[in-house]
Image 1 (cartoon, rainbow, N blue to C red):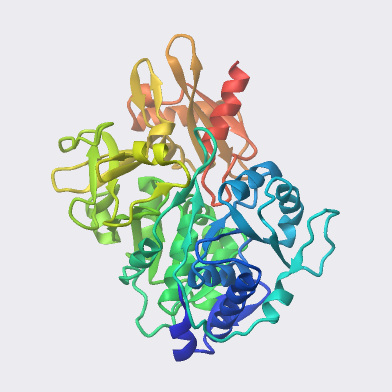
Image 2: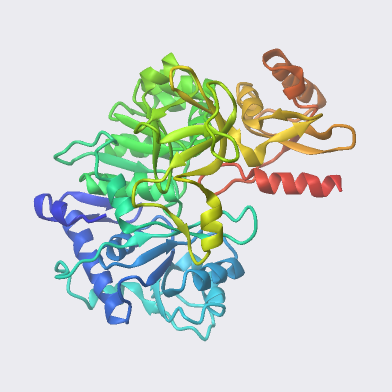
Length: 510
């Protein structure tokens, strides 16, 4: 993540554009050098940790590039966590510095009480009023402005350490060698022009791994401008694509569905012909949604299956249309297998866990937890907990997350399959199928549905949705009941938070 080359070759070209400001490659490079020096002058050395609690702002990009060239370990923190949750991450990652923005300062100030080792505190927008706190904040811009913007004489490659979602126990830092991130960006697999000039629309929050890698690191590495969305909105995304001549973007399937749910006249109002490469991943994409987005945008949609530790597979539109539902073949031979709990490879079309091979010399580890690290590997393979299969031709297919599995009457049911059918109904804005306790079946299938306006919840509509599912799926997979909600709980990257939903309904059932 070093923009220095582009700062020399295309210094005036816009590097990062937000709703309120823009910086050129020369400015971004200079500011990254300034923040790197500011952190060093406050005592941070290579290997130390910097946490960042910040929205999609230019300062996030500056900090990311600063830490990457000063040998520091950056931990992005989800802006929607509580003070106690942030305090745990600050203490666990051994943060010596925290960069926070104004909207997060109250949570950050609360968290600092539980992270006494975090003595450097830089506030983006530091001129605004600060909450009463024993922890003083320095103004980020003032700290930056006091430093030399020239390139560092002794750059050191840094790394990024994300925290797991903590579905079982406390979240853990996922640490990988600095070279692992660099190798992921070493090949231009994203279709950027080698002479720069492309424009990438960042639709997701940069504190998540995929947006940071695919919507900041990769485009900047190849000289593309990055347009930051503070929060995804379908109409706003189309307007930004037209305004900036966006050529690339990264999305999750929920965003596709929201775009496709716009009225036809709204979609037709915007010129999206500049798009050349639309990348998606992070969750299974319903077949009907993928087919419709390709019909609309053309054969420019690429899907990936990956982890922070490396790429598993890529698939282009033409291959996907010939093999609907596939996430493609392994990026390199043997990179992915379908196996049992011990990573013993299964035969073609058998359903099992998808295992990824850690790149040579780039095995991740859970920070300060060697036991958890060793238990995550089976030889050279690790799993994200996704379930799938591989066909006779070597194409991989995702079924669902193992954590989402419903077991009803001893039969495995994968909710993603049901969700895909429900999303085909014009009244459905979004859907989440979950298992709820059932005294006879163990679990019964419940569809929780958010409706499109002006549709209204009714028993008749519930029966219609169940009937739709029964016309497309084996009856044992179909919802026994439907619950309508005003809004489904979502993570800030747009994905539905099924774990929270399951907890909510199991609590009600109890």
